[in-house]
Length: 141
Image (cartoon, rainbow, N blue to C red; front, side, top):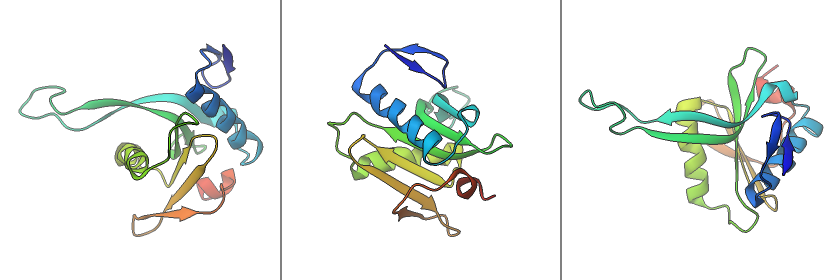
C-alpha cells in the first residue's frame, strides 16, 4: 500500500500506481503544482448517445492525473503506464481522446522511464515539448 495524497487514502502499490505517485511528486516539486489543484483517477465519459439509447456509444474512462488552474478548469492530463509498457502512438492517441472531453492545453505520457510532453498550439495541434512546464506556464498566468 502507498498513500495517495490526492485521493487521501492508501491505495494498492501496483507498478502503474508507483509511476502515478512518482509523477504527482514531480508535478508538485518540479512544476510547482499545488496538491489541491491535482486529482487522480478522474472519471469522465467519452462518446455520444444515439437514438435515445443512453450509453449506446459512450465509454467511461479515468484520467490518471488531471491538473487544474485556480478557476478549476483542467489544464493538463497525465497518462501513466507501467514501467514495462512502451509509450507508443496508441498511448498518445488514448491521451488525445481524453482531451476531446477535457480540452486541456498540456498532455503528458509517462511510464517512469520515459516521459513525453505535448502542448496544444493555437491551431489545436499538439506539439512535443522538451521539458515539463511550471504551473504558471501551464495555466497561462
